[in-house]
Length: 175
Image (cartoon, rainbow, N blue to C red; front, side, top):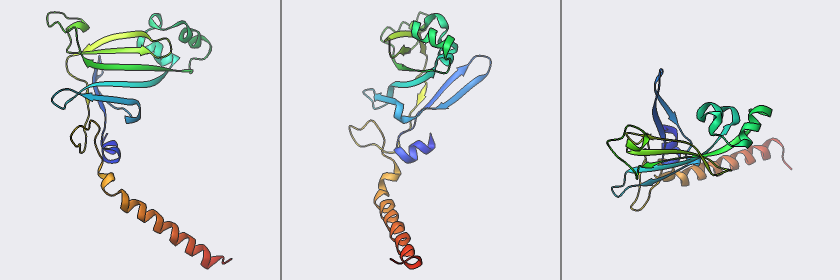
């Protein structure tokens, strides 16, 4: 996450509780994640498009919730990859009296991308993603990285390095 913040200005850290094992922290690639903010500028919604193998999907969601295509792939080629969408955001049907996923402040939904079918629904009491952003301007959701400030210098050093290499080649092996 720290590398992503330094390079891209935004990082994504997922935190959850794995039953019997404890707290798990996982960094997600910025390239597969889409974020949005609430009225206070806090990130409160994240959609993530990612791939699972048929075997991973069966373990995560259970065989019964998967489409026929993934079930067939599980038998023939368990390493075949399939796209999924994970959507986490404020629970529109929040009911504090309930103890199931409708009683959680944030809803979580996994969707099989090809068939557009829901494979798992759940929720979180708190938003499970920490989304640090290095620097943002007004109306910007994604952060700017410190690397952007020095990008002209980085490009100049790259050109100087190319020139030095060409000059060395001319000295060693002139035309």
